[in-house]
Image 1 (cartoon, rainbow, N blue to C red):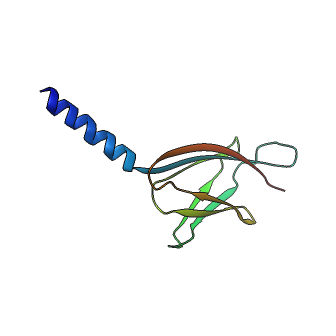
Image 2: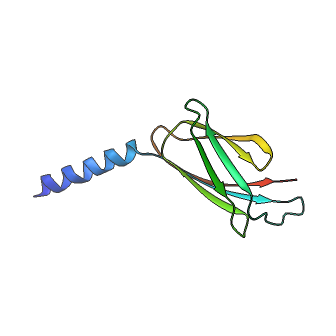
Length: 102
């Protein structure tokens, strides 16, 4: 029984290491650091040209979860390609950032 349990845990651990996930909390603020709600945030994967579109909430925040692709260009409103984010090949990454929209 112990061997079976150990094997199951080991398999789950290996699968989790191979998972490819990025969670990115982006907050859009104006030049006075007030949140900008309803702002369009678009991501475009560099190699495949896949696009994803998000909209900021009332607090100017959007949570972006990616489990595919490699490098994504981020555009906020009319600020095109203002950032590039990279999905890890293995494991999980979670970070937050503010972008000032003029």
